[in-house]
Image 1 (cartoon, protein in one colour):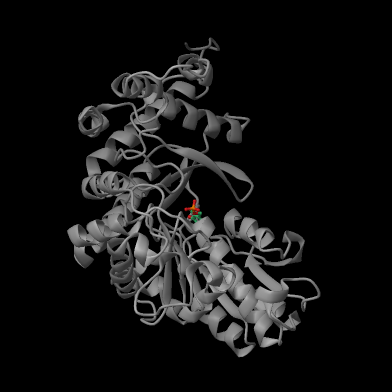
Image 2 (cartoon, helix red, strand yellow; image 1 turned 45 degrees about the vertical axis):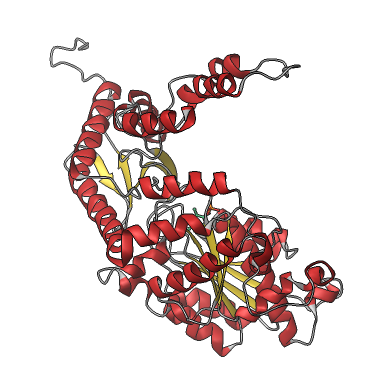
Length: 469
Ligand SMILES: *Cc1c(COP(=O)(O)O)cnc(C)c1O
């Protein structure tokens, strides 16, 4: 009861809370860093302590004025379904541990494929996020491309295996590199294709790199760059790769959702011809962390994960879904309950509206920002991402100035945005990914940026030589 009340009160206050934190690490640590209690305290007391201890250190990223990284909010219904998931405490490992979790996974998998317009027969695993989706998909890809050359990766691993070529774009997400070394392929072995000014793989350079590759090959493409929102020329890359028998994996953490809107569908044209896809629900679908999906065209390739488990789970029974056969994990939270509630409450139209509204708000942001003296938009705003750099005359260290502007904005608390490095320069990165962001949120946030710039801009010299103050 107490937790439910505290949760409801938090959501009600969310719009009025400073978006960023209001305590330093030391202050936060002072509140929580006690000795391990010898005797336990009453559950209610422990909860009170928890709430009081962490509140000031929460980044209120479900606020419609949170524009940091690429972070979704959580819709009320998805947050509520998440509480129930915790209370029901189902293990989504096998059918026997939770028949409901199993059938909901089946249905949500089908819905997701329909919604994202991916092949109907593809397999879907419910993982923590795109990082794990990459890891899972690339482990499957590795075994599949080795199989083409007569090598059994599940039985023999990489010891003595044929060399695998991996191609990534220069602006690919860091999580791909993490996945690549975790599956044993090594980051030094990645062939990096140069990108254009928007972060898209250069097609001619890709073609050349691919021509150099012989043997098992994996190509990673990006749908939605975290800085610019740009898409690699996916259609062409897939066509070229398939001629060589290469596996194509798509990083579509948020960009894959562009396909749910007729206005942005062209960005993902041809994407359904890839071999695997990684995406997040905790970004653009606005469900609570952690929720991602790994999707593989050849659904039976997921059997790689069953290989070691036969003795434990018994022979595969295809009359039902065992969740753990679709992810590297064994025991696991029943994440699909939340997705089911979210998709029921939004419907196809609701999802489309979130995507389109975020993109509209990003355009509005960009046009308002261009009115600020010295502000320059660095990217083509084609989706939900805006890069803005403030370049005032008389500022020697523009990188430092832009970092200071972001820090001032965060401190003020009206909105939250961070910085990134783009084209060798520091810029404000604005990602509009929240279901609830409206024009007035953008307008208030632009005012906050203007205030930060005004407070930090160099004092102009007055005509008579005195310094103004
Ligand atoms: C967020 C993101 C990732 C990583 O996703 P996680 O859910 O944090 O694991 C990978 N690629 C892109 C393009 C992203 O935006």
